[in-house]
Image 1 (spheres, one colour):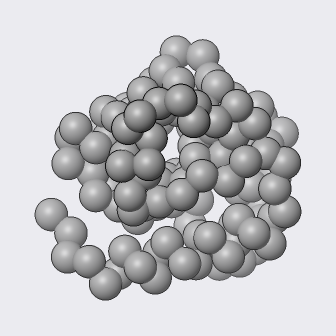
Image 2: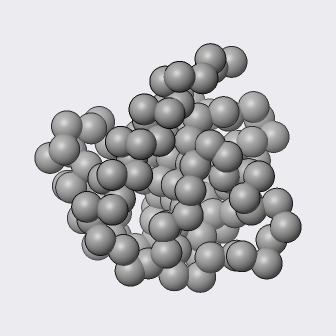
Image 3: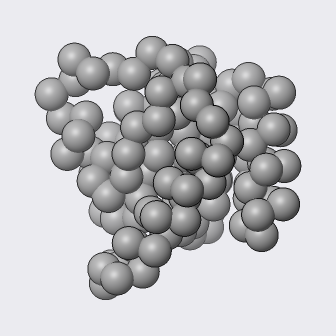
Amino acid sequence: MLVVDDDRMIRSLLADVLRRAGYSVQLAEDGEAAWKVLAAEPFDLVITDHEMPQLRGLDLVRRLRESQFTRPIIMISGTVPWEAQDLQALLSPGRVLEKPFRLQDLLGEVKLQLGLSSLVPQR
């Protein structure tokens, strides 16, 4: 999976927790860096912050969905763009977790989303 957050400490913490849970994790420091990584290789799940330089999380999600990325996306943010009318549709499959959240909740959501996505044929 790919974890995208401009806060180095949050990226590191999430990577550590997810790796200890047995997941393979790559990191990107903002949406634009994530877009380049995603163009180069496939991922089963993307976890992204929203407020980032270069390319905000919602804009990254829009790009991904326009490029036919059908895997789950979990948006983690303290400033969720709830006013965006397309947010819920774009995050399907996926979900929003508002910061602060419990790491156990993130792990549960990752497991749920990966389990659900394995039931849907991918393009």
